[in-house]
Length: 198
Image (cartoon, rainbow, N blue to C red; front, side, top):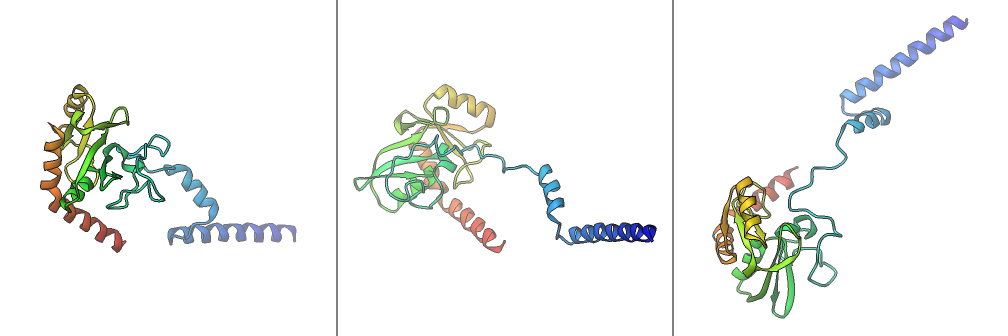
């Protein structure tokens, strides 16, 4: 009788394991299997070049939504290395990118005291002191042609040697952002459309 029970228990255990395997193949893994699989998966997505932690980001604008770009609502720390800031109608606004700053200007708003984040120090600097690298192979923010700013021209040159791109002044980079506006908006619209479909 004992042998019969042991055989029955073994058959049930085998059936249970086979059932779990079949469920997993159907996309319904048990929690134990999911735990094993999660050990092999990376814990986080790789960090984007332009991202910093909230503690590293300087937020110059005020209000409940101070960590969001006022034009596109993107998270400012997530895209901090392309952040720009300006005074608009007496109020400081902080943008995720030169694309959104150019869009603000295109809407007819007068901006003053324009600043940009220096990629190396993560500090805001006056745009007149910045050397931009435009069109590098490092992904940009809100644009197909990336635009990163450096306080040091030498650092900008080193970045361009490693990643490509053209050195520009703020005025040249702003013109490039303005010229790219239509195609960049089309690209953004296409990305949003794809995200809505998934």
